[in-house]
Image (cartoon, rainbow, N blue to C red):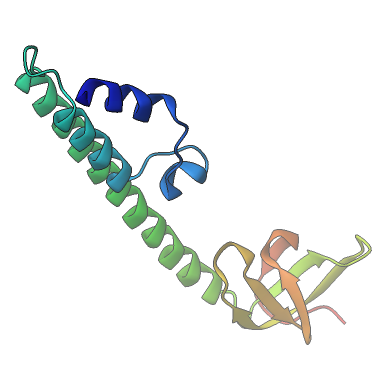
Amino acid sequence: MKIQAAQQMAQSPQTTPAASFGGELGKDAFLKILLAQMRNQDPLKPADSTAMIAQLAQFSSLEQMQNLNNKIDQLLGVQLLGELSGLVGQVVTFSGENDEVLQGTVQSLIWNGNRSQLRVNDTLVPIGRLLEVKGGQPRA
């Protein structure tokens, strides 16, 4: 009977919150699958313990890589913030709304990760529009 229940579970489409975002399985989904395998295994043919240990080791390794990626992303964000804050007071050349080339002094940085902006001559300029960074005073 347990085998039939396991087959029905396998055949019925189930989605987990982790799987619905981009098709990736999260920690909880992986552990649920592992527990379901253990609960519904055939008592006459139990699962290979070395295979389960290998799966757990792979899962642990994957989790550590994800944690490392998160830390690297945080580090890159802090590095970008430091570099961009060094632009305050600098003269920059940037492309305007109509692709005209403009120049001015950076007054401040509005930090918003990848969508950060510089305030140049009281105008908000996305980082992607910067063309050149200079020192000194803007040309008159």
